[in-house]
Image (cartoon, rainbow, N blue to C red; front, side):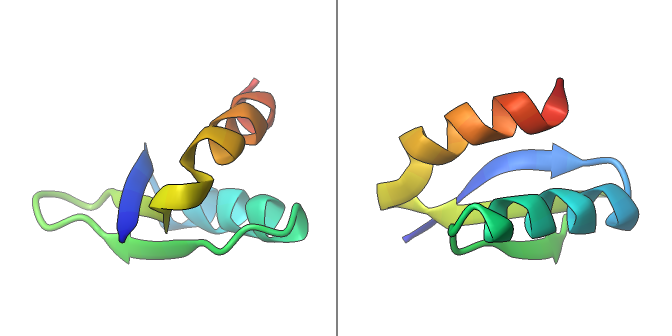
Length: 60
């Protein structure tokens, strides 16, 4: 099952995060949020904890 791990404020930021996570070897999907012009970044549930660690370093 895919799980939303982050909501990006723009397509450009979502694509940048997707690329960085993919470079680290993770499966990543991006989809437009239904409510606004934001973008959801999704990863497989089994990789959630590992992705959180990497995502923290990407965002800071």
